[in-house]
Structures are given as C-alpha cells and as structure tokens.
Length: 114
Image (cartoon, rainbow, N blue to C red):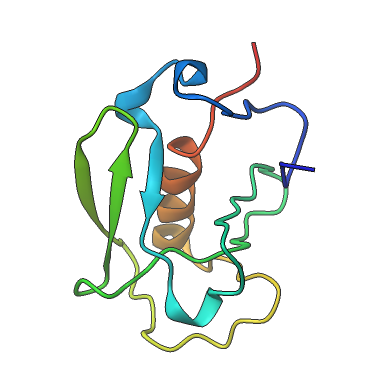
C-alpha cells in the first residue's frame, strides 16, 4: 500500500503524474522527533487534521521544501512549533496558526483525484 489517508487524492508514481509541479513538494525536512522510517506520510483527510510525520523546525521555526519543478522554499511556520515534540503516532495542530500551517503543507502534498 503506497498511500495513507484517503482514496480521493493523487498518488504520484512518476514525474509526469504531477499536474502542478510548482505547487507539489518532493523533498521536505522532517522533524527529528518524528523520524521513524524512510518515508514522509501526509494525512490528506480534513476531518481529523494531524501530522503522521512532522515537518522540520530546524531553520528558526521554519522548514525547507523542494518542489517538483526544481525550486525550493523555506516555510516559516505561523505558530511556534517546539524544537522538541512529544511525538508518538501523530501530532495534531492546535490553534488557528497551527491549522493554517497544516493546510499549507497538505495543499502542497497532493491534489484531488481526477
């Protein structure tokens, strides 16, 4: 199984599958407290906003993203994410700034299936 979340979003198996490459990341800094395997999973369901793997905070509460078109961005988080997180299986965003950050990450992770 290659996907975590729902059956309504695209799964990208090759470069040509990505319809909006300037808005879809392929490489991301992962928070050290959520490193658990060689993958980075994004929860695409909106009913239960939570991170399965947490984006990094190593750049002054910001995270590096590399996108499918070759450009990169440093995303400064709207909420203060702690440098050490008590992380078990998932981490739920708390507060408006945290939810906005989660939505920003999610929107750049996949797109609705066509």
